[in-house]
Length: 80
Image (cartoon, rainbow, N blue to C red; front, side, top):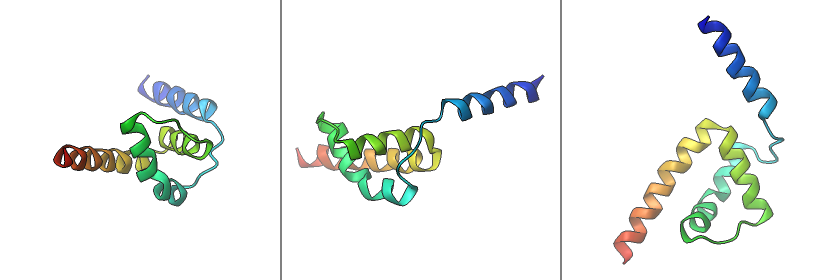
C-alpha cells in the first residue's frame, strides 16, 4: 500500500509541474534579488516570477534559498 501512495505522489508531482524557464544556475543568480523583493514586499518582475516557479519545483534550490533568506533577514535586523 505504501508503494501505491508513493506512486500517486510521484504522478501528482509530474502532472502538476509547470514548465520551468530557469535552471538551477539561473535561479541562483537571481535568488538574492528575489529574496530582497520578498522580504520588502515589492512587485515581482516576470523574471523573478520564474525564480518563484523554479523554487516551487526544485527542492535543492528551495533549501539553498531558505538559507539565503535567513541570512538576509539576519543582516536586515542587524542593520536596524
